[in-house]
Length: 480
Image (cartoon, helix red, strand yellow):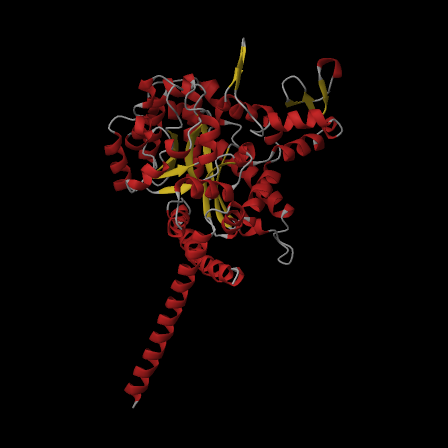
């Protein structure tokens, strides 16, 4: 009798489980059919994608993620000036005779406001060329960082709050933010100078006290996160902003366009931070890849990363590589950056990877990336605005064809005037992604993140529950 009862209970449980999975599969299938029905309706598609869980954004530069309007408010709060010729923020005192006016002037001068926002972002930008002056998309994009740099260095907490809130409101659950808070390593590097022997160089920096850099960064980050939590009311569950639920980790940025001793010192500090603080999950070289120093020292930089990775193999590396296009550099400069980042620099993910088909033996490289599970951070809007690479000229579908993991990312959503929803929208419209494709890309954004294993496990489990909720809600609002 007892055996029969147990058998009945097990069968009941099994039927319930099968019913649950059947219902879930049915909801997924119906959601997929609805998705196909709105594929050619951008407004409905945008609404669908905004509500859809989007996992993580793994390529997001904090200073470039903040909108120009916020930077203007920060500048007004700090009593800064606007250099009307350079269209950049400048320190007080202001001097109208030298075209330097108080930042709040922009609020009452519509023309100044308009051209300033344009100068601090890619809004309404069009490449131009005339005798003696020209500006490409890449020129304008990277120039924005210098224009708002005086402000961005002083408002990390507010910037974190803006970016986390935007992510939470778009149903993202995880961010890996690339940011620079290190004010020490570059100074020490300039003091000790360059030594070709890496062991000796590391010892010189150690003797100069570079270990203090990591402590200083951690202190600044503690203060910034506390300010972010305050601004988002994270301690008040009844009024907490959606951004409070977004898990944030950080990537230490190394400035590849600087002298070699500074690059070495920053890589050293980045590894030290990743070893000392779980919030720092990786190290990454930034600055334009086509710059003179970036191109000249590329192989040296990769060997630096390999050197420190051998000392600390648990530290993750994602590296900007292949953010190049034909004509931007000589053909030889397109032949090996992605491969070198992987085979020499120990990269676990590649940022951009746009010129992959210009590399030597590209099909072999693609197969190697697929075999090693080297994910590519795809930044569609950024690649269009900076490199002019879009649509069928972008390698996004090629990566997918050869089984290379891809994740969709924003890069610099404030400068680009975009967000994660519109990155997915662009991907769907240009590459005919199915709902199944979207779910795989979203899942991979957590799978290939550098979050600690317990955090990644929790985020992954939560993502599946969020997809189930999203699909049930989608079915409830579909017109009958």
